Length: 181
Image 1 (tube, rainbow, N blue to C red):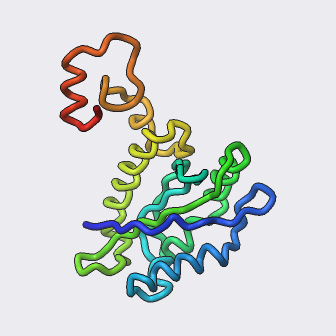
Image 2 (spheres, one colour):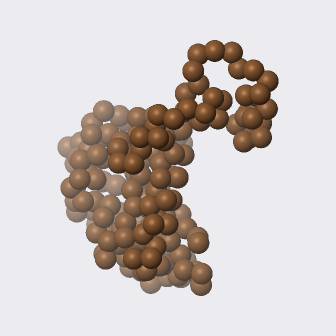
C-alpha cells in the first residue's frame, strides 16, 4: 500500500481568492504525471490524499488535508467550492504562495489506483494520519471532521501541547524512544 507524493504545485489566486479554473495548476500536474512515465492525465484522475498549504520563501505550512475517492479523482475534488472556501480563508489572513501536494494511492504494480470502493477506508486512515502530522506543524489547520481526538488528546511529552508541570525522566525517555528529542 503505497502513496506517492507530487508537488508542491502552485495555485493561482485572484483578488485574495482561489479561482476554480486553474489551467496552470493542471498543466503542472500533467507535466509531473508525464515526467514519471504516466499518461498526462493519470495523476489528476488518481485517488488519494492531498494537502493545501502556503509557501513563504523556503518555509511551507500545511493548512488543510483532504482525500478523494471521487470518480474524477483529484481534478474533481481539490478545487470544489467547499475546499476553496477553506483555502480562501487562509490566504486572506496569511502571506504566502498557495500550494497543493497530491498523494495518489498506487497499485502493487506501481500504477495510480482507481479502486475507489475498497481503497476508501485506507485513504481515510491516511488522511487522518496526515492531519495528525500537519497539526504538529500548524495547530490552526482548518480540518474539522474526525479531528476531535487528534486535536484534544494529550500524551505528555509525545503529542499535542504539554500540560504545565515538570518533565520527569520518564517523559524524556519516552520522547527519545519516539524520536521526539
